[in-house]
Length: 227
Length: 221
Image (tube, rainbow over all chains, first blue to last red):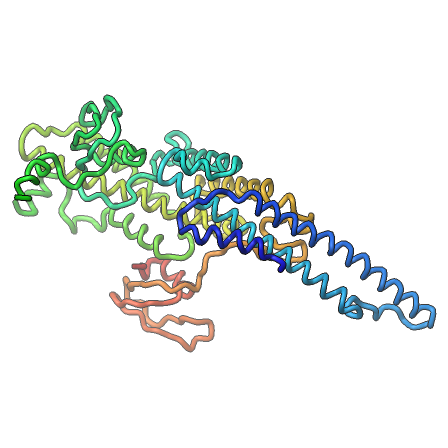
């Protein structure tokens, strides 16, 4: 059936979940493009036949001395409808292929809003062009947000309204000594700190810190509460 | 501590001394922007005023004396207010940018929509459209037959840009009336007329009220 492969391609992406990036299906994309090229070849062949048929008909009419301008492609329904089916199939395949590509591009864009660099596990699922696209988009967005030429604000920060200017965070990875506006802090794995939220945000994005509901004092009290 | 002491402490005039503060205006602009299906006028003055105020306030906070109790309380409140102001400003610009991305081809094809963008947003839309187009062409479209290679038309026989996402102006929005406006026609034939009075709430199609929104008769919620 025409267009089946392209539908499968889109279905594969849909069934993976709304944000997931399954491996780029290079093979299937290539097959769909091949299908399109077959359609195009068939269309070329058909349009040649149609033109020949019309010329034949025109010649016949001319021989009988009748007007030739009434001859149209609808006089050959078989070839014309085949032509239209091929045409529609190309449009359908084009639409589906673009949906597949655009969806993946959008999902990659979303990753840029969540973190600055591509995580390893995602990278293995992308085609080289898609990795390139992440870099392109990242540059575009960074240029817009730049301090000198752009708006000078990082829009990827604080997607949620702030509740308090400072927050408790737990350190997930050793990051050495980091300078904050409140002073320099040594981030050692497992320790808890009270930091300005705006400055902790990008470290949370990078997975170095995690927001902690309870501060260190509450953490001390938990064993007693359990008893 | 009563409100007077707090406002004295913070050095800001109490509410009612002058109209709405810029941060409240910004919040309204953000809510309007978030709820409207199309991109609204860019609030250039408001954004730059708020950016200046944030800068000033940041300096004040940095130089504030927080050695005594009152000073450190004031400082804590300032910092939270600052964080909120920054958040609203970012959220406003972010919402606009994401809306712009969703229909960037339609914006570039329409002069009227372009006038509503800031210079930088326009530049961004331009670049993004070019890069997206390039990506589509290099990875998919260049393998197609020549007459199907367009990125905004399905094929060469399409008369208009039939592959372009446009904002859906007929989407329904929630709105509140800010001033008594009187009778307003909600459709072209004029058989659906409503009397808009202050503080009324409505769910309406966006298209008929978009001029009212621009002229501040209503706000979206």
